[in-house]
Length: 319
Length: 255
Image 1 (tube, chains in turn orange, yellow):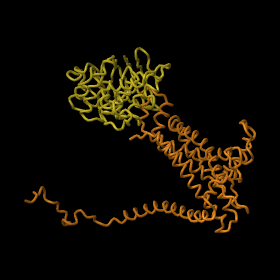
Image 2 (image 1 turned 90 degrees about the vertical axis):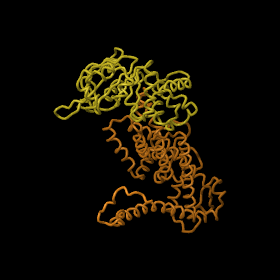
Image 3 (image 1 turned 180 degrees about the vertical axis):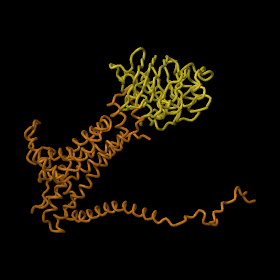
Image 4 (image 1 turned 135 degrees about the horizontal axis):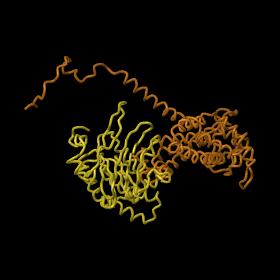
């Protein structure tokens, strides 16, 4: 028995076959899809190409210099006649400047974000946020000279902590100014994450007799944490990758030390300094640049990974 | 408990609620009904100064709470909200564990008591304990909508308020969950004064002791202002209202 026909099929003058077919091919949809896919592959492709171009000279480098020497010896002088390939001083230089920068940009950036998102009146926020974002647009070379010619002399004049006052080139001044440079990014991204927290959560907390600080720190901040973590990860990456400020203000001498008052060379500063030097292509000195680049890549990756893991433990997800 | 005289409420220059005069007495359930946009939510948010959080709003007239001017200059709105709790239209648990949701209020208010006991007692009074006692550390979002709303009631009870304001607490829930919340409200009125805003006239008739009917009045600039039409014992409102507008509303002729 055939199924009963419920209604006569509509006769649109098309014939039953073409009823559900597209009336004309939709080329524009195809084009848009391809263009968007291309955008995605462009960044992935660039990343792969960078890793590839780092990997080849790095592998060649380690066939000439032992991995053990590179990661365990304590002296870095790869371009001298009596070359020394201990990368640790550069790693500590990067870590010290980065930690100083994070110590500035994370607390102050979060504070600014809480102020803008929870405390500032709408009109004040509309003025302050663009102003803050201008800070992010200052060229880093300007920040570098600001560190060297303003912050360093100031630190040397007012130094009150135990230990020697900072030297003319020092990691502290570079790190502090780097922190100020990154602060707007942290503040702006964290503020976006906090503003996105539903108003209903704030009302719930106010309805229980919370004050503004309690609402901000116990409800809004934890709920926005995944966005704030993204800001921190970006801050770490920018601090570790920053070159110009440390090149100008932290000095060019590798120094295995954790004392930020001393001058240091970072991984990036070495790459920049050696890169504008005259290393013949294919020489060990030339390959050193790529080995240091790979190290920077690895250290950044590890630090980002650890910070994501750490903060995920405190994260709260809202629907 | 509350004595409200000549209450006006403004958003900027716009008067959203005009000249409300009503008393609310303790240990009963007062329902506020009326068509959409008649200012009933705005009205109950005046009672715990929740509207203070919206910039550009202003209150005229007087609200007395236990004889004290609620908007007096020496009154701390945070203390007001601790004593006059609120349950919202959409369940809004914090993205924390069930336990931490209930413990939040007591913690921010510095209530010194064994927290485990207080959490259990509050969940029990909100008729939720048996369903969640084995998963207190789980996220509040693992609960159903009705359970989340009872969690919000437990969270509110935990700070030991005097009054609980409920702003359409069942409008996002199914009939079974609604029924449980209504039973809970009748249970709770022995200890708390409850003011509930509802869209649902049957709900007002089922749970409340007194009912206030609000409606909108349109002025010549086509601006809608909420006014209180009448307030009386619930049976009276639903059987023999004294105002024609109330009768039209409850018989379904408008709204």
